[in-house]
Length: 328
Image 1 (cartoon, one colour):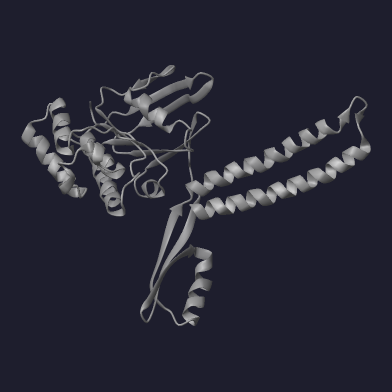
Image 2 (cartoon, one colour):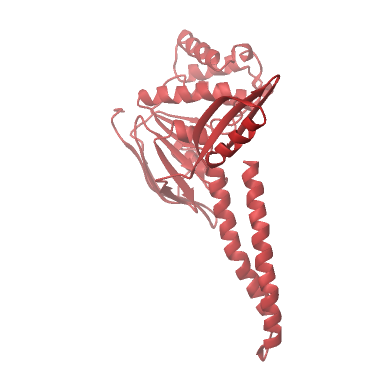
């Protein structure tokens, strides 16, 4: 395949029974670009990757991949009694690699991922993060045209995440097209060139993502130290407060992050706030309705009760939103 060729997903659809997971999805897979697919858990991101990889038969549409070499890094990699080294050597042999060449690649990547001491460990005893690294190495024994990744940073420590991000940038320079299902803000910010949202089976470009300015502060006082993170608009007051208490500001760092988790949470709760009062209204009307219509005295009582229900639900949903925001 010519590296300059653009590969395409053309109007593909997939349903499981009455559940429409992918609806008329089209996407260009551009060499040298990283495409991020965002969305709620269960929205169909993994289904889309499985369809592109050929693991799942689509109901309609077309995949024009021009004989591209694909590699897939799943969210959950399988385990086996084989140790990591033997498994990777076996996969290299299946791909037609010379044993010495395969071993050289394996050693290079295992060293980068701090896995030198784990090569002889049976894969069934490896952690999720280590299994994910084995999946990455297996996918990159030979450079693919398209790399599919499902939540690639799950289970990875900070150092390994940095190695992985640098590796993805290097692959883009080799004209590898990366298509990833992702929710990690760091990956989207540092690697993704194009971002889509998959919702209700429909793939839409996200022209702009919700962002939040955060300020990281490191204070010290005698033998004590304190690290804080706060929103940008709150940072001046926070700094002033700690300086007045005798703390010394050692480090101040600003960072812009994508608020994907809060974005989906706010949208879900907003929809709930709109729907629940309507449901309560229908229920009250059903309770106070008889064959002669709605009793005016009962309807007045229903109105009062409905008002309290709406206020109570609004307070509850706002409290829940705040709790979820703190969680993330």
